[in-house]
Image (tube, rainbow, N blue to C red; front, side, top):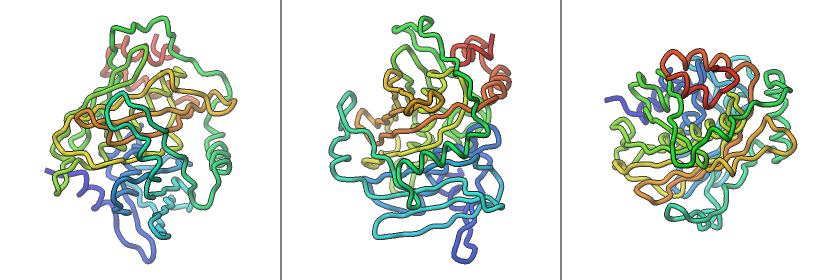
Amino acid sequence: MTTIDATLRHALEVSGHDLILTLDPALQGLPETAHGGSVLAVFDALADAPAPREVSGIYRRRVPLGTPLTLQRRRADSTHTFVLSDPSSNVLVDGRVAPLAADANDAAPSRAGGGGAAPRRPVLSGLTRREAAESVSRAVASVVDEGPPHPHPPDEDDDARPYLLPISRACFACGTDNELGLRVQLEFDAKVVRGTWQPRTSFRRADGSLAPAALTTLLDEAAFWLGALATGESGMTTELRVSLHRPAPFGARVTVTGARAAVRPRGDDPRYRETDVVALADGAVVATARITFVVVRGAARRLVAGMLAMNDPACVRRVFPAYAR
């Protein structure tokens, strides 16, 4: 049985002062693109830091699969920073792993339904929060439509009835044919996006805990669907801030939840949506995240075409009503 930890280790090789990262195709999110949660898992594995910690990334461009990428890493005290670049030296992701501030960890709810502060925004590669946001905006400006999004009609929702979200064959999170992946099935109703996942053997670590890659991926997947439901469009998650509060025991059922009412535009640009997501293992909070979703022009049309091949049209139409009629 191939494990996710072994897959991440095999993806890395040393090249001088830097590393070369070649992501396995099994780590796919959107077609031909690495799942955002899997890239965070690489940063987390390299830092090998104890919980509580924050793992974060600003995604500037699509991260390809099966392509040797340069990964620079630096460490200052207990903070690890990473810069992932493509063969043309274009920066793809800025990453950071650092101890979680004591007040942020204390504020995290210990049980389901508790309160808690949202994860703090990272400062990556010397960027301020404003500079990071502007940088991401410039990077995706060429592919983001200026037109208004097409949100899911709220009057079709039924508080008492959950609806399944679309799945795919190859996705690391939901792919039915992905031998390494989670194979999770998320659902939504008028209030939340949620899913309960029973860990698969490939996510068991040597110490008996759950691989953090499962948590970063579940949180990122839920955030994507929160953004898609809020806009009626597909896109990408561009800024991920995941707080890993405590290790999750392997075997414990993991539930991921994000409130739809908490999804909000970033500033005055409706293409960007901020989401808050929480992951619980056996009812105890193990991770929280604040993740930014951005609408990408043309992405929904391409994604829907593939989804209709294996999902009920009504399932796809509930999320992307303008593209699956």
